[in-house]
Image (cartoon, helix red, strand yellow):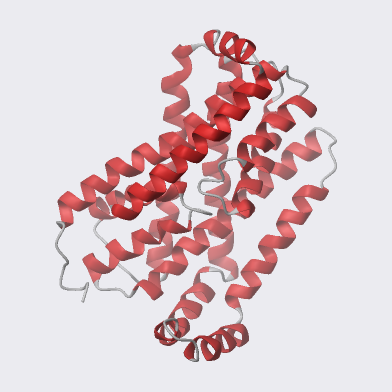
Length: 318
């Protein structure tokens, strides 16, 4: 919980600075006027679609655990998955390895065995969102080079994670480094699990699930635009959201804060031709409905998991 508090304070401070800058660029009066016009009746539908996207992602998490032959009761597994959302504000969401810590407490499965499931989630989040980006680019006759670059990076990352040779080299290097040498014996398990999860079939299944979940979130994002009266095509909004989200991941900033907002605002002005006030308002609403809503769900899930498992270390924590 202490790490979560630090992450949350850092993310809130960074977010406050970013949103202050956003307000200045948007013109505070124009931003306020755009937000006042928002159709608040759409909030349940927006948050419902975003929440449903996480239900679909939970199915992917369950599938990955099944591939790894790790069995967790559905109820506690759902709570663990939701708790992982509290780490949405971590760099690249990699703090979601917290889920592996909780899985170990329930099943005894080594963290090195299940942590690759979190990495596979991030990899297929990337491939799923790239597919949506391609759809947007082709439908709007926009250059696909940005999406091709993201796809190339994703393919390279997957190849690295599956490489036995690189794993052995990393193990040799870590074994010679103070403090990090204790990680070396676990690399074989990590690489083996990564290879299982990123093989052709699991990769295709994970990408398909990711494509569906991102589609639900994109629908929620589009309703944000509808609520503000931004009359733009669905796939244009999707393209802007896809590029900005991928930039946020690559930035490795907590929750992508700053990078995502810059991507959304900049493209809404230059690509979607929205006014600065409307672009700023839409950027703010989208981030509230995605990043901060997910973080809130995650904190609730974390409190539930701590209640279910207790604060004390279980027998598998030793």
